Length: 177
Length: 286
Image: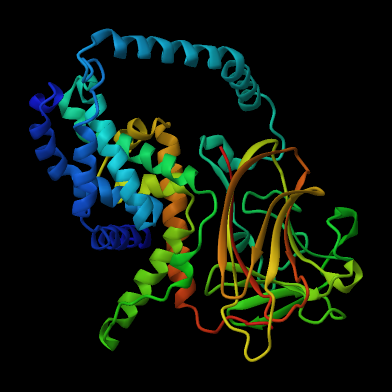
């Protein structure tokens, strides 16, 4: 880390290999789009390199790096105001045995519930439940009050729970023509 | 483990399962760009130390100018909005979190149906299920759908008996609001919009994010899809032409006054065959 901060590109390359997968996964979870996640993760790595000398406390690197990748994801989302709903219209190519059908249905419902969350709510969920940050670290990374972190988490979990419970109810949807 | 903890565990497992590794070409492109990028506070590649500093000074000056002209008055407005009286905001607003309106979550199913209906914060008359008198974007010509019907164990709908298939419905299985217009053709009198209206209980800026999807198939008959619009009053903020089997998203911010309405409108265009539109929507105010 110190060598990378001092401008050593090979040291930064090693650091990028170490954190790249997590950065990409966070961007992908937030954006729900492979191409845009690639662009956001790439921009985040470049920004981390550029601003690394400004990081005074190396112990805070993780939170700081997540802040940068979330910002890159937000910026990427703004670039494309309209998008095709691939996630809603493309059938899953996952195959499943009957034994796992319930589990896959739950995951599909989780995905649907997650897709319905606003971008800034997804970011909080991802930093909490994927990156493993504490509420105060999330507040610092996103520059929002800790109370907002808690309320976004509460709403998000409620939304995904509703999606799972809706699926558990019997019946079929109407299709008017 | 309580139900919320169980969901949290499922979310963690699902996120971990979906965490694919960064593609190699992304890493390579980033490192290639890094080799051309000067770190902040270091000499640039040409070895001219003042170039970066001068750029930083200019950038800071530009930001200060923008702050003075735009951001400070806006921040003062926001402070006034935050600390001034805000009639209509429910108890959850005092916690400092975002207010979120979701028409699928707020839809009151049988036997509690209401039109107009309240939001989840207890504000009355926030959601209205409506139709237009013709194909004109004019709120004075929008009317509440008078009839309610339990379609199945999973779906309820507001409709009007004399207008076949004109409906605004709630599908619990998909957590969406479904809308279907009536008629079709070039003349404005030959079409009726299906309309979902959100009447704001707050004053300020809201974020509107969502998606609309058309049916994927329509049997043997041709169908021309629909046009989905979002209006504030009679002003159209967004208009999306949705063909059969297609979907589109929308995301924008707009300012509303208390009592002002946003209308989410499905226009059948030349025919109303297979014009069921599935709407997912979140309106957020922070």
